[in-house]
Length: 386
Ligand code: NAD
Image (cartoon, rainbow, N blue to C red; front, side, top):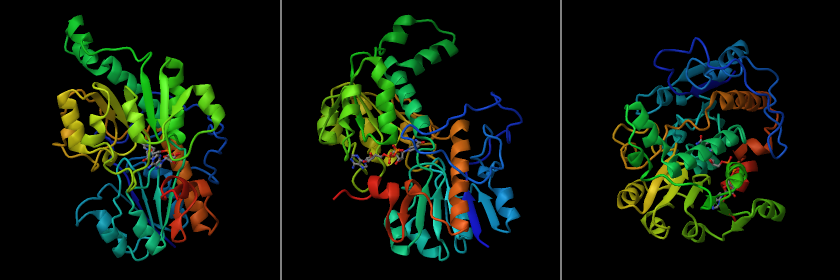
């Protein structure tokens, strides 16, 4: 029998919701590239319910316990006396979501003597030290595509919110005001702007497709070029690197994984090469940006706005400078954990667990690390390109 340690974000302050705003979720048959949605043998939850917080347990607890496994669900993950630290030593499986990441550092992995698999209920497994997982032969898997479209939608929302300066206008209404001049001094149309996408994987490509009808000029860079027919249909300009991309755009959106190559990439030097008054939306990972360089660029006017939903660390401390910097449109890490997305990644986590517990192979597209090496999506998106 396995010990499964599940680290989830805390319940709503008023407790698990007694009712929901909608009665059902739309049914999606397939992901845009033809990949099938998760295929667990069954699910123990109603899609549309809150599953990502402790009492939701990703809909896994009853099923795992019925099979005799030992299950611990906690939101306590930071500090030496956290439940995560206490329970890790004999856990076979750790499950965590990027929104509330269980940081599996080399020190923690060294203590996790029985750990066989770290599952990301979502996408983005940088909270696991991947080189250490490779060295220790721990499998790392995530639910590829489960919330890529969720994040693409959030990105488009934040691009529009920044460029049109929506948030202060909303605040004027809430505050009982009506000064139109105040409301529009930083408000522009997106139409005609140059928009650049850094990394056109599942999310980046969906952002390009969703922004194309806004009559913007679209640019992108990625380690792998999109098919020529996609570039032609969307009218894309390809750039060899991010340096060339950022110089030529008014809006930059960021969709690369956090790796040694992308860590701290948006720094003072790179930001200084952008057009004055550019906007950045980064729902990829907070640490791709140099935290203080972003604040400086907003204060100087080099950036006109910054948004996204990813921070470092998470949860962000109350005094994190991005909470109070000017002209930001930050959300807590929510883009990939809509109730819609939760149903998909809970089902995908169960699929991965069913395979793992029965000794069956895990789909290659869900694999980041396996057998002491990057594998599947990890080999494409995380490993250094030769
Ligand atoms: P994906 O694997 O489909 O795409 C990643 C793309 O990044 C690939 O095309 C890859 O070639 C490219 N890439 C990697 N390193 C690069 C580099 N150094 N330079 C240029 N391109 C590079 O993944 P996805 O589903 O599009 O997700 C992308 C990232 O978004 C995830 O790794 C995760 O960090 C983040 N994410 C955030 C949320 C959220 O809730 N905010 C949800 C899902 C994913």
